[in-house]
Length: 220
Image 1 (tube, helix red, strand yellow):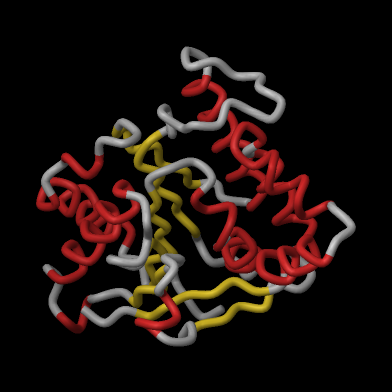
Image 2 (cartoon, rainbow, N blue to C red; image 1 turned 120 degrees about the horizontal axis):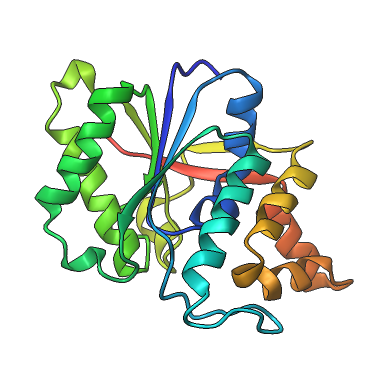
């Protein structure tokens, strides 16, 4: 944990929970400043709780509260809500989104950025965010570019990218990561039920999500 500042850029509340929350908690415990820029409030999320407890009208407010609780569970004190609308990032100009990311980089001078890997992030909002992060870093002089640890989870990730470059052991952070997942209750109900089950499938899911977190390095 030698970073001086970590900047996390994801489009939706809960994007941080699944693949990086254990890693972020380790940075926080090591005294590394972590800033989480969440671009939207997930207003258009398909899930309304399981069983449903949200409505289309209440979901934005619920997800904002969930985001705040998740950040608190990780220990993140610098949470930025960037004010974009869910499922519209793909229609934003990459240049404009890159300007927004660039402003964060100029302010924070991160040594590491965590986001999605372009072409392997599945959702259009994820891909737009990934493209903006890469463009913002590309604009910097080579000697000023932060490291990029990116999350990839498309079905062909391993075939195209190979094994992850960075594998973080999150042993000891399982309960904390579970609290982060639980904070996003409107979206994570089915996953949490699966993780708690007594089955081979549940054991495999716990191995995947609760023991390590995996990243791909990206050189601009």
